[in-house]
Image (tube, rainbow, N blue to C red):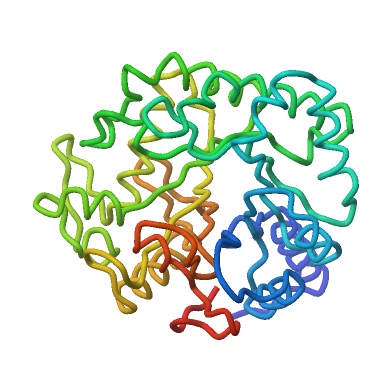
Length: 343
């Protein structure tokens, strides 16, 4: 092979550096959900150190816990910060309340890398969170206004975290559509997100889909170990995770949100406490999940991309119920891994 001239070689190197500079490698990072409803958990400072030690560069927390926000300062860990459901009514009631919330919990921590504000978690007319539905969109709008007024509108996106149960028909995924009884609730939220170019945060759990219908869904399909299926419309799905994500994309499209990206704000598999729960299944699911969402294959509906995903959860939370809810943790309270997993 003839060697390139020095000038040509320099140009090729420069072009290569420019290409590398434009690639979004941060999209390949998988985050974790840090809940605190467990006994003998390590301090927030130790939790941040644990994340850095394990190359975990993104985190979701469910409330503005001051010690955690202080520990995250200067860490370069990107954060989803939650507005708890119990705060929605107060924040929806006045712009001043939202301004104070953003001032106290975002602006007061300039060294924290806020990525999203998740206003509410799994608020739904179909759940025990139905009491919050009328407050959710006004709270999102007020938090958005406060973020914009703080000059952070291009840096921090305002969204909410929903469950896939809002989708009615979900098979085949192309037929996905929001349930009739939730459309008056979710459609205005979809319009808000599309208007503000924000993603929808979705908690995606093949575990629940499988245990709810083990007759028709194989465990291997849920654990990313299946050879896949071909749906009636001729599309091959290798795993249930992609099918759930794409069903939600289809529902978004039908609601006028075809421009909206999905961020998987929770996904995981418990290691004990219920059907198909074991250390081996939890390790298999979470390891395969990380490989899949960072591998650049995307889903059949949105191919050739990484899927921003947050694994639930850092630690077991023994104060929760039912029993399987106690066993989603990746790490033990002594910060040792429950099983081997690599981020």
